[in-house]
Image (cartoon, rainbow, N blue to C red; front, side):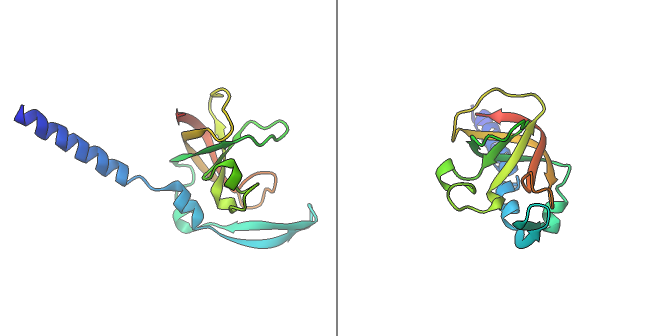
Length: 147
């Protein structure tokens, strides 16, 4: 019985240590500096990102992200928008910054979500500097980890 307790304690310690070492993806996004620049094609100013070297080193690697599903309809979209904040506080509605949303494209469509449903996903990170039709932070080939 005593050995079982020590093994269980060791496993809990190892699991907690592994979890603690997982980088916070939202915190990495938050280190991005944005600069307003005029876009000739659109005829207006947009915020363009200056990604950190730390974030650039994660491109193509699998990252995890937890957040709220935003029911943003974009014609013909094959992705969802995940937000660090609920809809009432999101980038589009509540004044949060562009570092608080990510586009998530799934390998296999996971079905429908409810507005503000909290999701955990993982996928390969891609950064977008200048395509104004998409966000700056994209997770591709994503899978749904938890609803």
